Image (cartoon, rainbow, N blue to C red; front, side, top):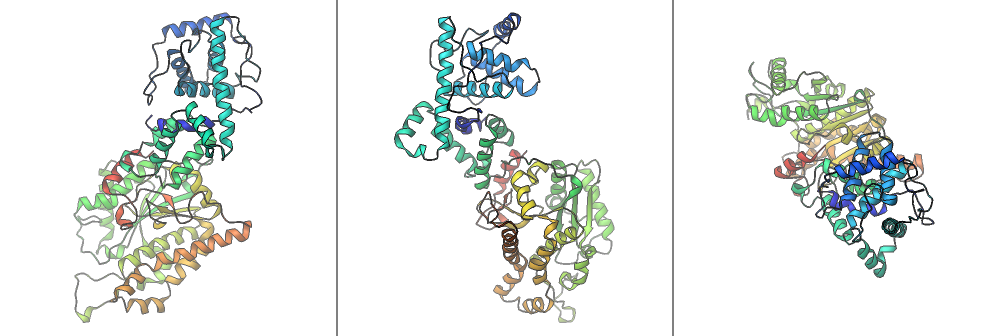
Length: 540
């Protein structure tokens, strides 16, 4: 409930489905409940030992705790009498003898009562009729308390709709007097999703426990703010599910040089720690997060020695030793099976083993980073050409996420309308370390990204000058540099088709918030090893 304290202020604008023209009240007190039902509430209340609400420094009075406990039951059961009980208790104190007889309700108590009213209204237990005046003075005081809460809430809810309201100093001062924790909690919310302190980030479950207090509108507001700050934990679930058959998650490892592996070696030779870091750990992480997903791990089998089949088999054994029940939907694939790799095999020629400086055995090879980026783009092209609706190509050091977070509402909207989503972390702009595509972009992706990078004459000219550090950087970044015109062309096409710019819910150069290491971006973004460890624990 840590995060609840930070977002409680947003409850002020929770949708109660009312207008300022009337007070949301209840009809005829306990008229809908029989005498036995009222006595049942009394009996339950006498047996009630209290309900400690996490995240509140000062616990509400016993009656409000009881109301809260009924709300919690309403979340998990379909008891149709629960809304009636809540309505009856709030309308005239039925069964609990009234609330706040000796003091005004606190801000947290107001929040709980308002939330209870919303839930009762949603379940049809609340009408829009005037509150029946009780003949009992104590109950009359109770009903006036309810009226005051509702009037105050509705007044400020309506004013908050006007964006200029809080700009007026006097209105803002009055507002803070009525809801004294607003400013503190609002600033707490902004700090929580600003990613200034990743290692103190609340868990996804903490956030959900807080968001459930809010209307759908306000939940989206919190999520959008978190997304704008690059928060990799918070997300809005999409309104549809992408079937596992409709997407594939592809990882990649390429050696720059041929390896001299023996029959008992795996993809990292005999180094189990490297295998865990680059192969086993990432695959197990994705499989744990997404049990039904299709996972691929691509390699250049030509670099794996004379018996690459055994190397792959030994790697698979290590996966099973790690606790995977089976290797179903986990496939090791050779990039040389891709037709465009075959057609451009000159790019993927590995350095020989053993290494030599002899001119007699000199082979003109391309920089490793260029080959890695090109291979990732070719893998995406391969799957889009095979009509796989969605393709995800990710580096092994990007933290795995669940299916729900992978295809969250904002991501799915961008994929279905633009056709691409790039990952981002911290202050970094979009990176090709994590890219999602929709198959509608297969032609655009080839023309704008791959075609310029497969011009053999231009490549050989650049490669012949790679001893110059600036030329080397151009060659290493050649694939990545093509994504800018690619994205511009996609957005232009959207404008032409729709007659307007795509309505990004984030900065255009800021991608899907993911957990990336700092090594991906140098000084501009990503997270330290410690921060990544903390944030991974917060994921769903």
